[in-house]
Amino acid sequence: MIVLDTNALMMPVECDVRVFEELQRLGFSDYVIPSAVEAELEKLADGAGEEAVAASVGLDLADRCAVRETAADYADDAVLELATGTDVSHAVTNDQPLRDRLLDRGVPVIGLRGQNKLATTQP
Image (cartoon, rainbow, N blue to C red; front, side, top):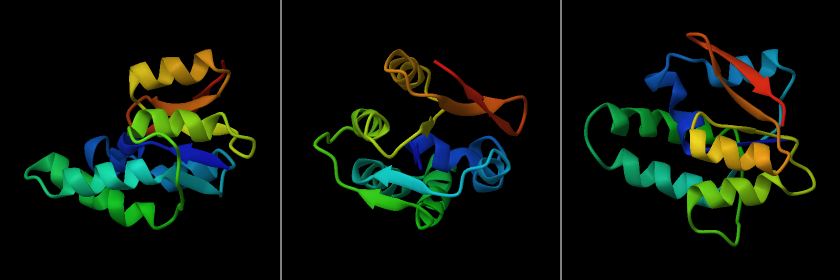
């Protein structure tokens, strides 16, 4: 199982990446998001502009993911909490500070490589 952060679910609009097709190409089929990511997407979708559109698309894509509660309220902390759990093997993000935190904790990170492909970075 892999955990996705907010910007991973917004990639289809922001980066023209077919996230779930790419994750399946990499061999993944079970996805989870923390409830804090879902809440962040809802908040962003209430805004205006491209970010709101991307968040709205992200909310639709979130339906493909199991949603889990975490002790952390902040989305990045919640992703880190789930990623260091027992049944999550990878995290998906393009957020550099979160990426660094995950790699420091030994979690492989899937992120954008090239224009519209995803690749794994090992810790």
